[in-house]
Length: 472
Ligand code: AMP
Ligand code: MG
Image 1: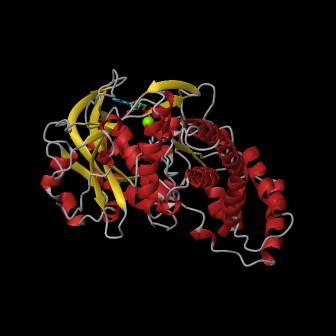
Image 2 (image 1 turned 90 degrees about the vertical axis):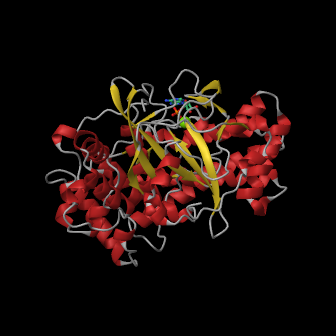
């Protein structure tokens, strides 16, 4: 079907892991708003099938994907540091698992596909606004080399969804090797179902970590490593997730569940992208420590499976792994190939300068490779400290082979105002071309894209103070 080789893999687990249920028929004459051929390739799908009306029917719940029986997964989690009990796919549905030609298994999941037994009191729907944000941002991060769920398509449902106001609805088709979260393990552990914890761990290891079969401790160590590397990736590009609850933490170390995320513009380590996070629990500079907190919650959930000492030693590797990866990424951003004493200081001093001047995070690195005057302009008029730093940097890089900075430092990230521009274009004017332009920029963020340079800039005044909340 559509070139897909489908497999019912998750459903090999017993029934307590999910609820089998057909998707709801969402929307009135749903139509394909945008589709992503690069994501189609990941699942071994023929890109031409994306525009097949029969595929739109599948992505809006009006038809099933072959014989695959859709299912909603159960999980629990800690939200904002507090045990939240059972959650689960409240508006997501696994509609297929496809084996691609490379032998990789991929989940195909609808988000906004209607209510499930895990919806609690919510409507199972997704609004167009947050669907466009997730669609663009998952592709933006992936293009920056940061592990993420991917986005295959947006369906416009032609129905209103009620949040603070009535808004147009949508369904996102999301792809990931797996959507299993830390919270899946917490769910069974906290119910005292230790056999299920083991079953799920073995299921995940067999498919996604086959080289670690039989070694649960080594597997947890690998989850710690992937999570540490994910955090370093986010920090290096100035990305804040906004809701790092354990139910939003991927067991594969992917960026998962895009809500009130934000790419930092003016550099501020305390940046809180989620308007509703009043305590700043998930502030930008808290993220690496929060991920460790989340890994501890996962370790606790695995404590009937893995020896305590092994869990603790794996957790203890986190900081070193994080720091090593972060340093590597930041050195690359300055183009520093060979290590020299004083490099850490050089990087730290630049970040301090950026904080003081509230310089744009992305451009502070990108413009390093361009005209010096442009770069200094980011720090305000006649900033002597910035000039001094620049001469130190020049001296330092004269001695080194400077890596190609424009291949490391993106020109385009998904700035909030850029995402908002795409949303307003679609919602106010039915203008898909603007969405498509922005989609192409974020999918090749290192290229120049003549004529679209405005999207690389900080927000124009009228789009300066956009607030992003959990409402989606
Ligand atoms: P989130 O904050 O988006 O990670 O979601 C937390 C939990 O709420 C998950 O179990 C979601 O499936 C569920 N959820 C969020 N929004 C909705 C919705 N509109 N309908 C049903 N469940 C939802
Ligand atoms: Mg979530």
